[in-house]
Amino acid sequence: AFVEAYVGGRFGYVQVTKASGQGPTLLILPGPGTSFEAWRPLQGEDRSQMGFGFEGHHELLLHSKAWADNEWKQAQQWVP
Image 1 (tube, rainbow, N blue to C red):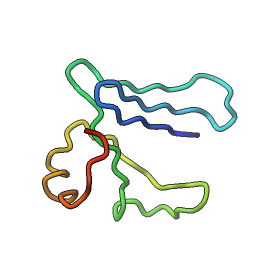
Image 2: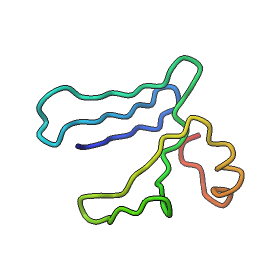
Image 3: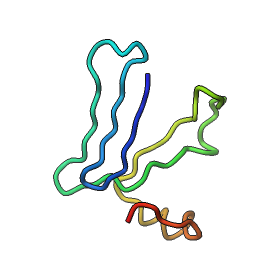
Image 4: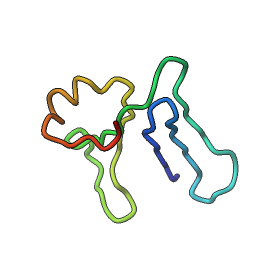
């Protein structure tokens, strides 16, 4: 399957499409009063072997302040 994520706040989405391109597509949208704030790679927690065709597992964050205040403190924000 192909996973495409757009971390666009309340306009964000995650689209999951079968590799064949056939059949339905899963579309995940934020609910009322929520927004997609971050798309975090599960480094350290993910034991899968990454390579050209696989970038590892990720999680979608609805509440990212704790990560921003601690682990991402030195990172530059690219989605205001």
